[in-house]
Image (cartoon, rainbow, N blue to C red; front, side, top):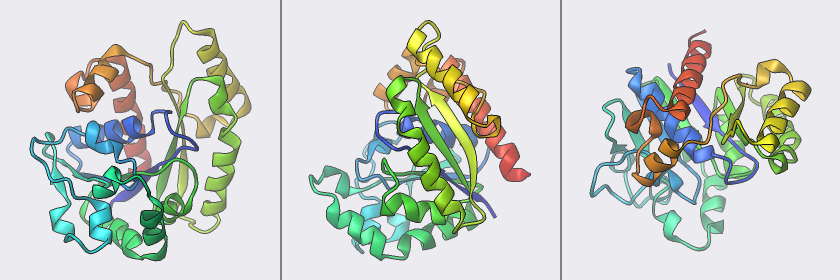
Length: 256
């Protein structure tokens, strides 16, 4: 039986999708059968997961609405052990309210997570920003959760809120473990970035903050622009190594 890992953030632009994609790729590089599911209607996973050319545009939303069978929305990537379910055609719609209501009212999402968990070593879920009904439902079906936190002062304002929200779900799902905050977009020569790292390490328990920092690098930006995870495009890059190390730590916890 595998594990479901939710990637959750209070707001967008903190490296949530980049983290989800690169952790999934890092798991797959280890030879672990991995599935990444994009339930965020923004659908950004499609831009960085390493899809093959001429891939299907259908995904989770289309499976949810009955437009597609599950087998038709599980897509291959450039990594043999990594498959992806995109958000689907909802990503091209201006209004996502109908999709959000459909997910909230349906039992297909928890059923999908349980089925995937039985067939894969790791299931990574990229959730919408915030702790709305979709993210809440994902967390109820997850065993692990990580929270990317951008190394900039404004990000600190939302941290208590997201941690409280996760704790409220832990009370309903005893299997759920908060593996920790992942400090992203770290700039070593930026005083503001350094202050965020110092504050987090001083004010939060050490067991819920990954020691490994994910730096902002040119290679990571280039990889996303090329539609690939940095861990596969430039595995020696500092950001790639950070994600690989975090994935290793997560695997040890999952196996433990």
